[in-house]
Amino acid sequence: MPSAEEIKKVVESYVDLVANGTPEQVADLYAADATVEDPIGADIRNTRESLIEFYGVIAAMDKVTSELHWSKIAGDTAVFEFTLITEAGGSAFKITPVDIMVFDDAGKIKTMRAVWSAEDLQTL
Amino acid sequence: MPSAEEIKKVVESYVDLVANGTPEQVADLYAADATVEDPIGADIRNTRESLIEFYGVIAAMDKVTSELHWSKIAGDTAVFEFTLITEAGGSAFKITPVDIMVFDDAGKIKTMRAVWSAEDLQTL
Image 1 (cartoon, rainbow over the protein chains, first blue to last red):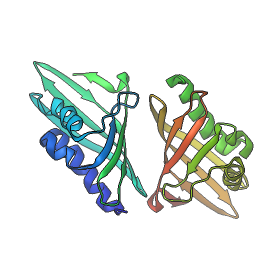
Image 2: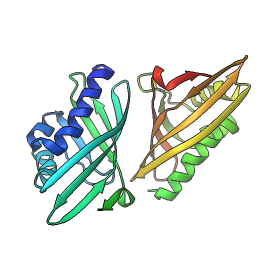
Image 3: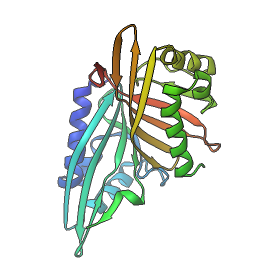
Image 4: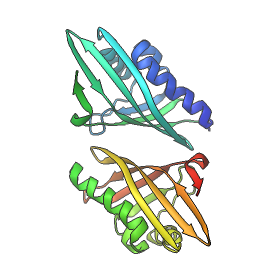
């Protein structure tokens, strides 16, 4: 099992790469058989292609910034809150999810479930 | 599926009953086949008896107080942070976990995984 420090580094990379990396770099943080449910209740994405598509929507914005607020780690699991600000076509949105990630023995994200609802989405 | 409001009420009841209720009242919030991993990495409790034993340790303290800091709900899942202060034999401990709860269709807790480590435990 990865250490808390290793898991924390992946969380920090994730929040950074969602804003500043390529969709492929974000997908590289995930295990081959990973599942992503973002937000919880949405269809579950379970292929690398569907993850690249998902993070590609964010990457296609005019400007994206992100900030990790806090993270908490126990065993194979991280829970963390971050802000993502996306700007496109003159509109800007701010979203503040709490993500739950479970990691595999290789330190890759095995499952990600994002807890957010309409009230966490703000027009700037 | 229970509504976000229904889930929030169970979360509030949980934080209240852990401090002020009986172990049986806390166990009543759980589904019959529920699992509890507290903290994540500990042995998984999966019987009502083991839950009553677990919450009984807290109930046996001289004084217990709790406070819900925040909760976030999406779909069948709640994530929330709370403080639990336990006093016994002249010692007082404060713990601040982030709990992840998944609910069943009846609004009962199906799984609970608590994210906390030594650094979230404080001697008062």
